[in-house]
Length: 242
Length: 127
Length: 113
Image 1 (cartoon, rainbow over the protein chains, first blue to last red):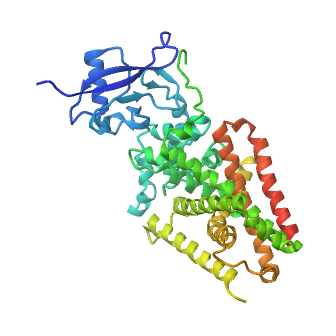
Image 2 (cartoon, rainbow over the protein chains, first blue to last red):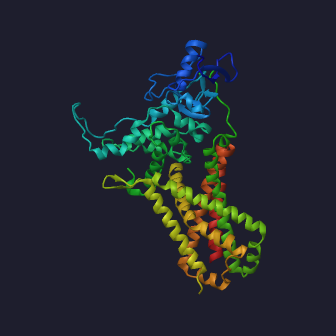
Image 3 (cartoon, rainbow over the protein chains, first blue to last red):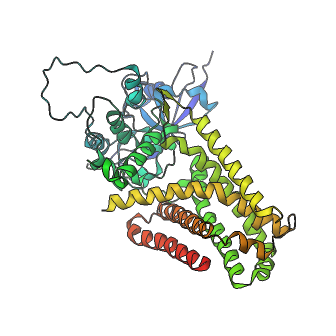
């Protein structure tokens, strides 16, 4: 019995060899339980060992395997080949990032943006013992929990036309991460110096695609709009300024 | 980074997905918001300057009716999208319970209908 | 300074968006479509003038005009930059857009007084 197959069109970019990415077709088995990532692993194991791509957990937690699948930013471990009927399935690197090789993009800029928002609990004026506990009520946890679900997969950056057009934009995940701490009852910062900037929340024109692309339902668009209101009130009302 | 490929700017990015195109349409409604304000100001100026009949004649031109038909669609689309997006910026919590988006949107659209009805009544009622 | 300005511009944009959403569709429907095609009769000039006579009404009209125009200016500024890749000309585009909105508001005040 011959197994059904589906065609993957994979963007290959080999520095020094290719001027720009070229689509290379590969036939891979079409199995109901196979995600796009399984198809890529099949290519690497059986057809062309030189194909490069990032992956780790295969279960939507590590955030490594984000790619552009048929034009949409997707986690390839959670995107099944059967979604695309008889194919072909076009697999390209995430839009908006420099391509290092094949499907591997440069994430340095993204990592720098994440750390620029001080993604930790900022406390002022105390030196408590390391054993100190900061209890939270369920409501206090609820206030930020949604924003803590981010897996840093960068799909929201790739979906955001503002970021793709202008890489100086701080971007959805970093602002959502900042809000994860701003809305935490244990945190004492509001990160206004980083967020209330024309390349941060004021650069966003609320396309809303970050939220559509997010595989973890973080809703970065909401995080940004909420901070716009916070920042606007802080700028306008003198008593809310620190 | 040596040898990394940096994609060129995609000039037609807004044609790449239906949702990008809808976003750009939403933003372009602002042109007709400005137009609608200009048109209404033109009417007020005509009232003040005694040229009201001339304004009515201009408003009855087929091309002007066509422009205003588009302006009606655009301002309507603006109203729908703008009132729908409002709950994103304002998270309302009552006693720990987050008011769901559809309630805020429903309230916004009810206010829209109410204001529209009042305005129409004020303009149209016989003196 | 710049970030303070962005905050005020965003508030004007948002307020203007709400005002435009609530007021404009019905006004365009009445004065731009239904009256011109003859479904409804035009109100008399005297009646409209009387409607606009109270100072509070005139002030409200000028405020609504200003908010709607700043809303439009803000969106046109960003959309022009996104559609045509003009972000590096932002200072010029911003001055033109918000300047036009300010000019329109001044004209509205002039017409009503």
